[in-house]
Every structure is written in structure tokens, then in C-alpha cells.
Amino acid sequence: MQEQGTEEEQAALVLGANGWQTFFRVTLPNIKWGLLYGVILCNARAMGEFGAVSVVSGHIRGQTNTLPLYVEILYNEYSFAAAFAVASLLALLALVTLVAKSVVEWKSQQQLLADERASVKESV
Image (cartoon, rainbow, N blue to C red; front, side, top):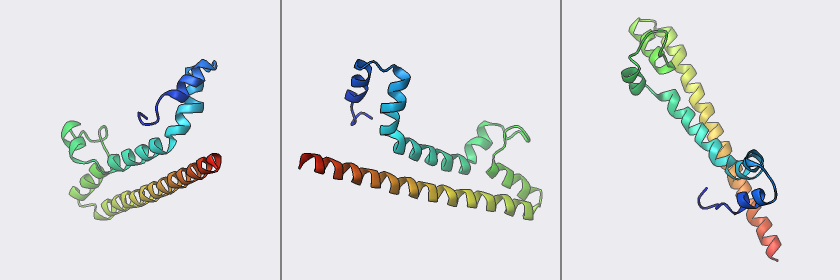
């Protein structure tokens, strides 16, 4: 966002847009791919979180539980089929996250190429 600058936001404010209009019509479209990429990476990190949740939250059964902690609980209770099912769900969610990450990267590269082509056409 620093590289992008604040010129577009300032222009919107000078033209009479309020803060929310400026955010939704100027700022958000400029940062949408980076923001979406960050959400996907946060999701991936949260799905795999084990140690910090186990240690910091106190590992209170039924209150502070995540899927990785649930897999551990099931495994320690010798419910191997259930632990495998939950672990498989985590693996499936990880694959969906990887696909979403790849799609976002591809879309953002396509938009950059389209923007470059448009700027070249304008200069010609």
C-alpha cells in the first residue's frame, strides 16, 4: 500500500467521497488480491496451529479446541478411525487452501498483465 501511494484516495476525498466510499471504491479494489492472499495464508496457518493453542489456551476440552487438537484427543483415546477421519478432513482443507492460493496468484498475475497492456496501449 505504501508503494501504491495515497494520491487516488486523496483525489476521491477532494471530489467529495466520504471515508467508506473511498475505501470501497478506491482502496479495496487496489488491495483485493493481496488481502485475499493474506486471508488464505492466515487460514492455512490457523488450520495447522497446534502447539500455541495447546499451551496457551490450556487445552480445555470442549472450550478451547481446534481440529489438530481434536485429532490428538481422538488418537490418545484410541479412536483411530475418527482421528484418521478428522486428519483427512484437515488434509482436504489444506488442498482446498492450496488451490485457492494458486487461483488467487494466477488471477492477480492476469490482472497485472492486463494493467500493463492497458498502460502500453495508452502510451502508444
